[in-house]
Amino acid sequence: MLPQPLKIAMISVHSCPLGKLGSRDTGGMNVYIKELAHELSQKGNMVDIYTRTEPEHGGVIEIADNIRVIHLGLGSDDEIPKLAIYAYLQYFICGMENFRKSRDINYHLIHSHYWLSGLIGKQLKSWWNIPHLCMFHTLGAIKNSIGIGEDEPELRIESERDIVQEADRIIAATERESQELIAYYGAPAHKIGVIPCGVNTKIFNHIDKYSARQRLGLDHENIILFVGRIEPLKGLRRILEALPLMKTEKPSRLMIVGGDEHNKDELAILRTMSQELRIEDRVTFIGSVAHDTLPLFYGSADVCVIPSYYESFGMVALESLACGTPIVATDVGGMRNIISSKEVGYIVDNNSPHQLASRISDILSINGNSKKNTILRRERAQKFSWSNIADRVLAQYQNALEHEIVSL
Image (cartoon, rainbow, N blue to C red; front, side):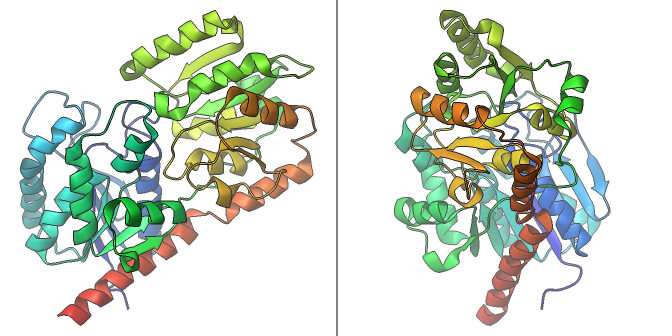
């Protein structure tokens, strides 16, 4: 049996879970950490989330009963690029230990997110003599094998390999990721637990399309929606190329939600492409929006498009379905588990503009947002509730703690 309350040290060193979604290093992982922590606390556990201090946030913030976000400095007052955080990990580790001692806390286990946090978890495991569970969210070796965007450094690949061998349990979001961990990193198969990501169906709920469009000031065009970070790996350039190829009765507008000043180079490329393709009047760059505002955008859309070259899972797909909106997605992440029928959406073999245009046109040409289909999509999303996901994560915690007792 798990100890009650279970005291969990969760680590997200490079990105604060309170950060604005859609910016440079803030995306699905941040949502995952916050939602999982909330459900774990609802089930009677205590979660401390350790992260870096940012200009917007600092100190200790209690975001809910039994959930604290603890901001620690990195030994530098300057904004530090993600990779450069590696040089400050020892400083951060000492900060965690000092906080733990000052509050007289004895954690039961460590749950790290991303490779930088995994290195911290690896060292603290030996200091605190407790199990370490890790989740990578993306894998450097896979990103390099795709060859889109900047190469990930060998430092990351080797660090991920070390973490895989040391961790007591590894949580993979898909069976595909599990196989990649084994093939690329030599991960022991018995250590891996496959648990999908989840969706908050209280926040992401069906909104009448007419009402959603009124609130956003939209007209009656076909609305194609993209939600996510603005980077080459997300495949946005392919949607722009697909837009002129679509054959629909009404004109189509692409709304791009995400991005900030850190993505200005890629945004400039996308704007230039829009002009060259003569579709600039049909593309709207929204920028980052608050998480609880996203349902308005999903609700106003006729289809949500996920043209990524790589996703560890693809939480946007679940959010879209929970709002009743169909999906067109590349065969990445957990899409084959999410998109179960044509009423839910379509998976394309690759993100070629012609394939994207064809499948988006298929959805736009039928009554894809009938009440029956909307209900079906929401039912599909319900299977991925965060409460269900948290139960499965707790089972992994129990496995790690039981193994520790046997080892003693």
